[in-house]
View (cartoon, one colour):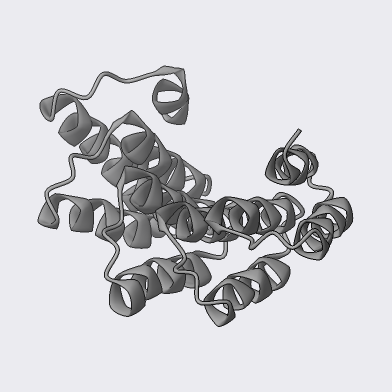
Length: 191
């Protein structure tokens, strides 16, 4: 069994202390940690929704002359999305581009869209969905479903804003089907 397999197993359970312990064991054995080992520890913190801990390990990765990869950043972005911390999720995506030159993928964008939807900011989710098109990534059912859920969450009240969100929800659903994206149970549930 490799050290990274053990680290990854604890990371999947969100057991950051054990993931760190085995990371330290890897280092004590004289093995130079690689991206896989660092990403596993970062994932262990993300599973615990500890963005600060995950960010510290990204910094440690850079301090040890390793370049964070797309998986590293997507893990941090997704962690923020689970909290509904849209501003932090978009900050990490922007950092991925500006500081590393990495190209975000659908996973990156979908996590940011989801973060805005969870933060009850469907306009922000729509902005990021539109940015996908600008960089020639076709929004998929996950992208659209997150946007729809954002509008659904914002349409819960009987105010003018709630009514406007309902209209945007129907409009976004029409755009999704016009783009030939097949609705799933999640997107249908938003209606």
